[in-house]
Length: 253
Image 1 (cartoon, rainbow, N blue to C red):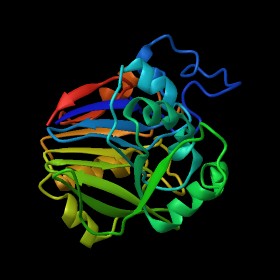
Image 2: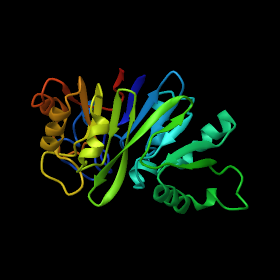
Image 3: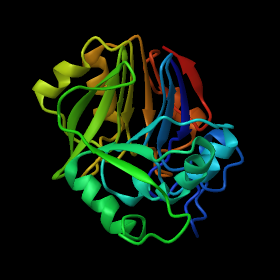
């Protein structure tokens, strides 16, 4: 599999609108982060995890011209606010886009994009096949996807494992039975918002401690805010097997 980080920022992205902090003014491209999303190319599928407000920009930047399915982690707008732009794929692929999410998230999509689900649709609205998933494995074109339930304060969120790769965002707690689903992953992506403790996200210390427990060959931190610090400085503080992800980073599993 080839993995591409489309975005590694938190809900506001980095730089943050109207912020004049040193991070937001940084000229280092690794300090500039679109909303978190990841693209996975397997032998069988081109899969996107989350389609936030920067979806169009991310697709164009990475020259992605084919997309088989979109997995949604949860219903917050920074993770599904770009779904209107699947219209381009509807047109080029001549089919509705398969969207995989929990029932409550699909209900949020219907509410937020009500014009796409009206009985008499306006021409050109996005076409979606909403496929309801639960906390159990499912298959997309021969690829087995294993959901992993994590908690985002009081909100259940799904991470996903495909083969030896696990992706988790917007978590501040994972119960032991779900951690067992992650164990053995060669590469893990985990959210780490900032250094200071946060109500609904792992901070840097918490994410590092969990990754040390899980012992993957390689780990990447994502969903990073401008309050984390400079990319080049934070990387110096991390164990050798953990890196800060950055937009456009690619690797193979």
